[in-house]
Length: 114
Image (cartoon, rainbow, N blue to C red; front, side):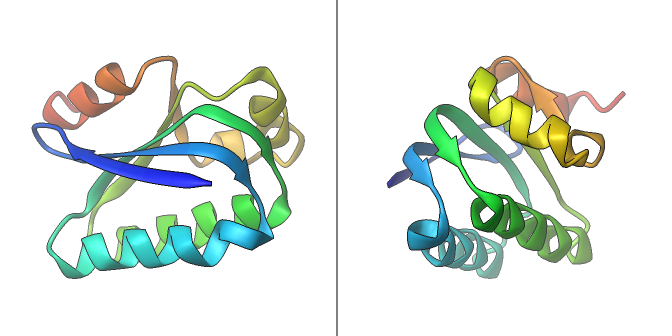
């Protein structure tokens, strides 16, 4: 999996490309942890190019959500493929994450809280 980051106005967009499974979960958590240590607390995780996500990938998202929450930040998800969206629905984790169709809309939501 490839992990790329870019900054938006009030958040960091983390774009994932490839399989989000046990082989990359620790790399993902380290990337988010390093960004938190650098002062970032709001994240958009762009899942548009993730074709597969298993329970370990999902667990790493939840673990990062907990860590970000301790820093009074948020994680929002964007553009999950239908297969990946189904994982969130089956596990009911779509209730704990805000999911957007577009990463730029998700990033703007940090500037315009509802």
